[in-house]
Image 1: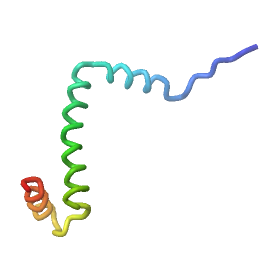
Image 2 (image 1 turned 90 degrees about the vertical axis):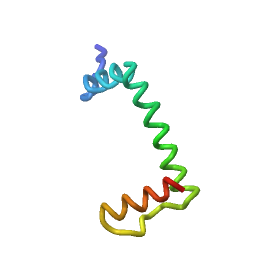
Image 3 (image 1 turned 180 degrees about the vertical axis):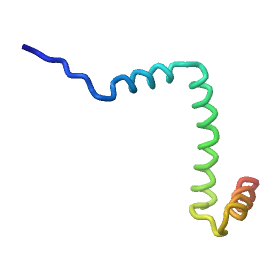
Image 4 (image 1 turned 90 degrees about the horizontal axis):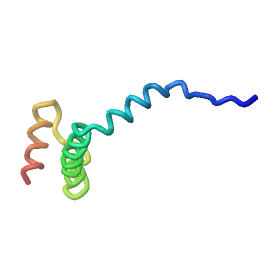
Length: 69
């Protein structure tokens, strides 16, 4: 007798696949790609690997200065 096994998370995977086909998801992933390209540019080209200032406000200011540059 043959058996077809089902993965434990198969239902969750099916829901995720269904969400990934919606128009809202496609638009969201396109917008996210644009933002992540900017982060990559900051990290690689401007060498913003680590923030020099401490605290959330100072880190925000440093990041805004780098993004402006």
